Image (cartoon, rainbow, N blue to C red; front, side, top):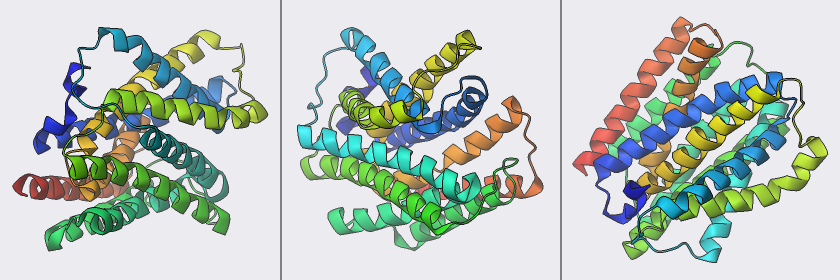
Length: 308
């Protein structure tokens, strides 16, 4: 927690590392969620609710052990913006998966997010990617499409229903709002909000928003495999939630918004690797090609960020 105390002073290299680590941790959430869907009887919105509650609880439990923070506490309007953006990002994504299938939802959401973030960063902060940056963004989106649609995970196909595509774009807009708002605050004032506090309050808002939907869907897990369900929920709340989002908010404050959104595309790459290792899903040649293109694009954009 001490490394999050003054994110405005983070060098760009560490910011890139934080976002990459966050995206890698997010990728493990897919495997954990797949196991939970099999064992717990929880639906996607109920699982997201418990993920938010658990992440907030972990951060709240760690706060007494954190050193004094020099970063300012987030204002109420920024807490609401981050919390609502987080809720929109996660809930709309699950709705896109329901209506369009996992592959299409992933490509449209994560593929359009860097474009929306780049537009927001250019409009609000005058951030320029340059030709090399634009080429890296295009390469990353292409690599993502090859990775997911080329068979990065088994049985993820679905129909491209207009409603599913619309939900995927709404999800991307929620993600873009979080990323641009985090960077804009740091760029405008020279001081980023305390990322641990931002993450804690954002998950609180997310949990409140999702609570009625979780009740409708069925908020309590089945008792058949309760010990393994609680263990997986504990992991989901700790590593890809509390830790990952605190890292992301800290890193996104010190690098360009578009760079953060492209580096975060490591998430589906990480998810593919963990799905192969944990769930036994095959790695196809197309998936390996997409992973290579995605990694090269992320590396090129990271080098461009460091040179800038």
